[in-house]
Length: 95
Image 1: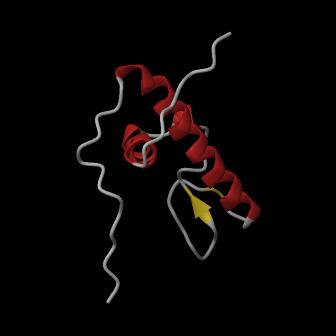
Image 2: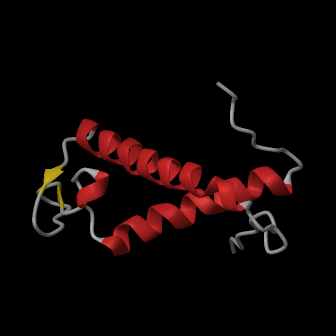
Image 3: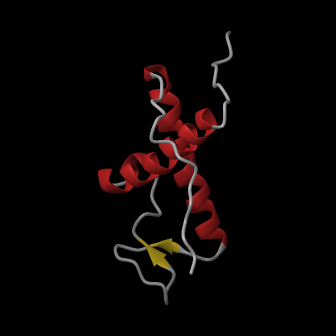
């Protein structure tokens, strides 16, 4: 039986100055997801229907309910923590 084993990031604390990056990654995650859904023929619908390929989250990120944004942020935060857990650093380009 499959047992997920994600990289342990419990010890990783993200720097405070990475909050803006986290939010941009969350927004981009939603954009990539939306683009893929649309390529598959999905359109906006007030409720989800797999049969009709309708989804209520096919909206711009800033129009999503906060609960949906939280999901994208969790994914983004975990990606950033994995980057640090693997020994990489993230630095903003000057200029």
